[in-house]
Every structure is written in C-alpha cells, then in structure tokens.
Amino acid sequence: MSKAIIDVLNKERNQLIMEKERLEKVIVPDDGSYLEIKKNKGKYVQYYKCSKKGNSMASAKTFIRKSDLDIAKQLAQSEFDRKLYADINTRFNRLDSLLSYYSNNRISDLYSKLSPERRALIESTYLDDENYIKQWQELYANKDDEYISKYPIETQYYTEKGEHVRSKSEMIIADKLSKAGVPYVYEPACDLNKKGLHPDFAVLNITTRETYFYEHFGMMDKPEYATAAIRKIAKYRELGYEYGQKLLFTFETGGDGLSIKDLKIIIEKYLRN
Image (cartoon, rainbow, N blue to C red; front, side):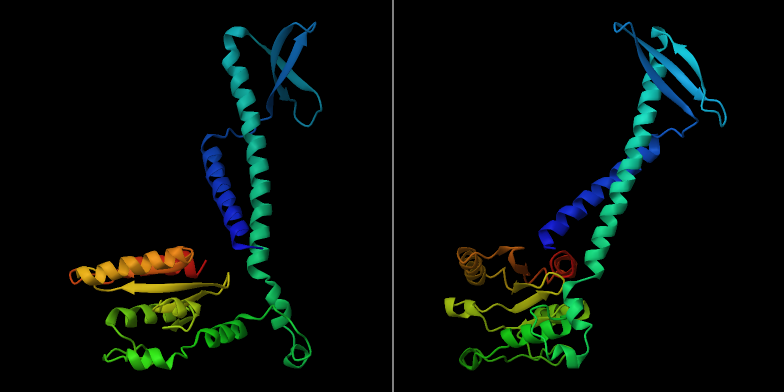
C-alpha cells in the first residue's frame, strides 16, 4: 500500500477518533426507550415514546403531544447518536486492523523470512530492510574523487561513526540521523552532481523507501552565502525538488545555530513515518 493511501487512511482514522470522543460526551445511555412515528390516515404524524416491558416483546406506549415535541426530538437524537457511535466504532476497528496489518506485514517480509539457502535461489525486488539499506548506501557512496580533491575537508569535526565532515552542524545532523536509525550518506554521489549540485546528505525513509536530499545552509547572515543558497534552492526547484518532496533543508546564522527542534521535526515527519 502506498504512503499516500496510508496517509489518507490515517487521516480518516483520526477523524473517527474525534467523532467518537464527541459522541461519548453527548450520548445518552440506552434505557430501553425509543421513538415510534405513525401517520394517522396518512395525514397526521403522531409520536409515541415506547418502553420495553422487561424481557417481553411487548412495549408500553405514551402519546407525545405537540407541546412536548422536544421529547420526540431527544428520543430521535439519542437513537441516532447510539447507531452512529456503533457504526463509527465498527469503521474504526476495521480501519485500525487494516493499518495494523499493513504496518506489521510487509511484502518484503515474505522474502526476508526465507532461509539464506532458499533466498539464494529466488529473484525478488522485495528486499528486506537490511539488504535494501546496504544496496542504497552503495548506490550513493561518494565516488567523486575529483570533487573531494578540489574541496578537501579541513575541519576537526568527526561524526560518532568516524566520518570527517565540514562543520559542527553537519556533525550534529549526522549523529542525530544515526541515533534515530535513519540511513544516510554524507556528500552522496548522484545525478544532481552533473547539474552542479552536491547535497550535504542523501537520507532514506526506510518505511516508504523514499530518498531525500538534505542541505544545511549554515551562514545565512552572510549576504554572499545567502544569495548562493537561494540560487541553489531555486536550482533544486527547477529540477523538480521541492521542500518535503525529495528535498529537505535547515538554516542557521552566526546568532542562531542549527535548530535541534526543527531537525527532530524533519526526522519524525519525513524520515520515520
């Protein structure tokens, strides 16, 4: 099931939760009373409050006068609210089961649960996460020696994995991604390189297997740097990369450093859903 469909189903699930909570505040417990409506000779509408007599199928009826029409309205509303609540509860349970099934039973699991000997005999595009991540990282591994030679990394910053990076903020980003279990490649090799763009990171949403390129713009209080950053974002846009759609970025200035709060939001919203 695609991420778009799952997002729609999750939105519907949240709306059902809200409606359940609303009804739980106003719903009247079923005391056995209900409304009966009759048309006298097909012309005049008559309302009756009916009550079941114990375990008997018979019921007691009380005529509701026009002056007491609010009683009929309350009975009708109460019956409707209880039926609506039951229907919403059924929809919620079925939707919850569907989402749970798709979350916990991925097609790739059919392949990954096979023995190594059996997997070796089968061709499948449904790789388990471990092998998919390995292939993904190999795909984006930096092979551009010319770029590295032209722009060598001359800082003291190393990630917890021992990767040499160009700034303290990039070190923090890499370590936060790693801690959150988000696969990444620093300064990835990709087709964008041919367009003059060298993203700081390629990051992978394991659940959706969607790749994002992540840029951190670290000196936005410097006019020349800010101008170059704006042009870079425009270049991404020309190539079909919009924020939240294959592209992520953060900013900082000399006075305002990298926002850890924004970084956490990016990880939770785009990389771990």
